[in-house]
Amino acid sequence: MSNTTIQIDDKVYNYLLSVSLNEHKALKKLREVTSSMPGSRMQIAPDQGQFMGMIVKMIGAKKLLEIGTYTGYSSMVCAMAMKSGQIITLDNDPIATEVAKTFWKEGEVDHLIDLRLGEALDSLKQLIEEKHSSSFDFIFIDADKANYKNYYELCLELLNPNGIIIFDNVLWSGAVADMDDKSKNTIALRDLNEMLFNDQRIDLSMIPVGDGLTIVRKKQS
Image (cartoon, rainbow, N blue to C red; front, side, top):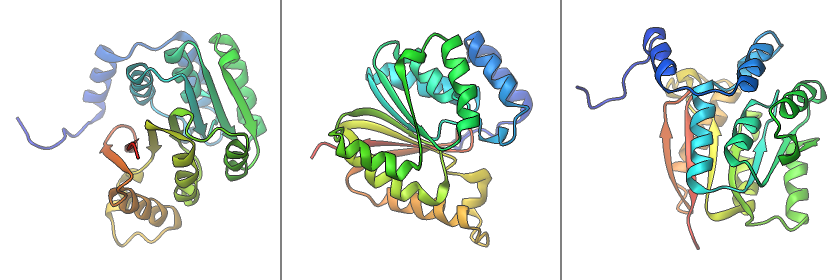
């Protein structure tokens, strides 16, 4: 027994998947297609996707927002968990998102997903102008790390009280714990983590799933 989180090697990870992962065939196919694409490391892990889908089910989310679509795995797994409602997903890559649209249709969730191409900060401000403030149940942020703090403030405005935000890559392969690492993305994530820890507007939990997830709950005012 241990009072620290178990270290996950390939053997343990494969066992974990073998007894817990129930992945739709369209999701599995999408992962396989994405693995050969440039930037494939941006693809979330299947167990992370299933975890996010579980949260969507647990909170009964019906209106979701995603920053960073890529090839659409996270939006599709959440749409499958939600079954009815709306997901608005933001990206600026028309090539990767064409793959996403193909698989959303194959997974029969394309009618639930509204893809908006452009700069995410502009799209978030537009959503506020469109009167979407305090209307989203669940937000997933997995995009350019330098803007995470900027995305956060706008997303907090868009989020329902008691709503959930999940940030991806908050451990950044462990680099955030290396104070000698002064790279731009590492500093941005380290600053975000410290800011969230001290933000009295939220409750949070950071967990070592994938490359690290921080789960934020917006407190009621």
